[in-house]
Image (cartoon, rainbow, N blue to C red):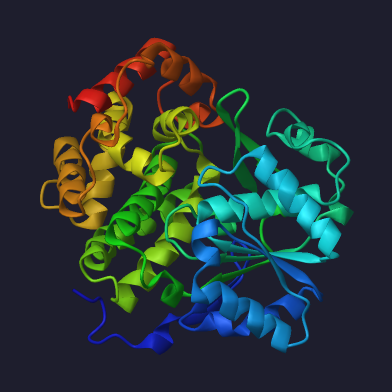
Length: 395
């Protein structure tokens, strides 16, 4: 049910300046050349993925920029879990084409790769020199970083409002976080019309990824009440609108609300992430599975493992979002029901992951950067136990 008597597209047209310059509204992609010029770009490089590059939205964006006098190129050698090699190839394409800015166009993988490319075009070191460890970010030559416009085409990762990129290291089979405060895109275009046509399964998985960001940020043990407030409202929007958009992919009001909730979730996780992401990163690097789907499957198992610390907090959240049963168990049951409603698998085994690498996944999860934000500091054995529960469906 809509929160307003009737859907008015003009309501979904606004300029926000938090956490960066956001141009939100239906059809805002038409202003892409104008936004490029605002940042001084004369030759932007669109960075996208092989699936999107064949679609009309990419060719239209490129043509629109070219017709407005911009020398606009396209780079699409980006895998679903982008690697350092993807970033290196993007840097080569950027430099050989003489480009002066990046348009990050697509889902989280393309946007993460694009932000890393924009960072690396002006650096002398290797990508891993700028991993989010200690004070590595202070060694970045910020003057030579390329400006970025982010155009998300899914509603999940929220990478468009993030200051980091998650890049896979194939040699070590781990995901690493590349960070710098200036990696935050200078302009973000939130145009829900670009998500029309996204299949229901991908709509569900990315929407649950946004949910996981907001929920883990809400449960993180750090003091950041502003982020906590954003997380709570993002969860309410997802509760109200994700089921709608999974039923009717052309419901523009629902598309717009979930897209905004995605950006809110990523803004909130400045407060921290946790065990869902520690396990999802480890599994994604090992099995090359979809990140949002992994978070969606892992969610109730990690929540239950954290119950002793987060129960009161979850009960408060359940009241805010209007659940009939505001106990911890009621909230957990609602998550399971939501996943069933939007056809998210209940177990990791349903997506081809077994328990043969239990010890490895437990070790990897404890070392993941997001593990530090979990309400409880889980050991390798505890992460392994959660993993096995998610494989078998034991709640």
